[in-house]
Image 1: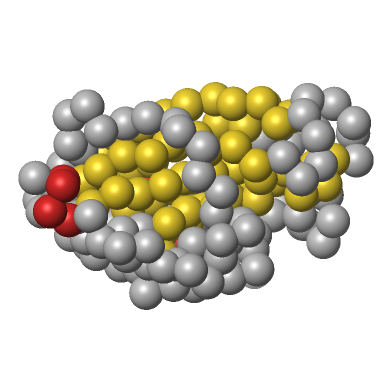
Image 2: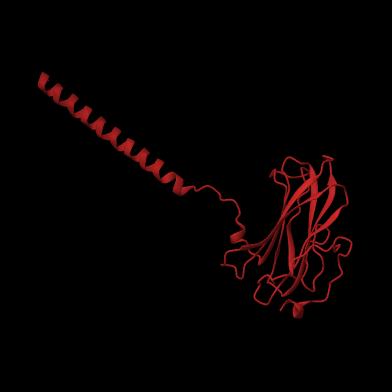
Length: 210
């Protein structure tokens, strides 16, 4: 074989390897560019997309080993909380026990309603057990949305403190009208126990919510 033939063979092999490497590099770059779109990060649940109409949330510091219970009552319905997780209107969807049997690290409870009946709503916070023996600050938020595809709108928010085991405080009492709007002047926190009154419905106050 002549020297020129060897030179041509080596040149051809070099070009072939270069083309293969460039194609491989292009493929790798394409995969890297598409990867974020093929496997998007999971998004934190947004109350704006939640299935309920009236959304009540209770939050307390994650570093505190305390079991705070959210209690809610819709017009004409029974109180809903950890020992009675469902009524005709509300459902308790998360019962947080503090650090006990909790893999999320969040101290958070929430309830959703099915529909928005007119009348008075009550929202209570109850300190079931406090292992930290410190005062527990609890933030409670109420949001309302008209339909499944509507965005939830926050209508009430408050921060209270619970100091002793068994303490129950009324955070809000408020009225919604037939359109799910907050009735002006209806918000107050006159105590109304719900935990001890579970299973006892109250008359619907729809007529007074106009």
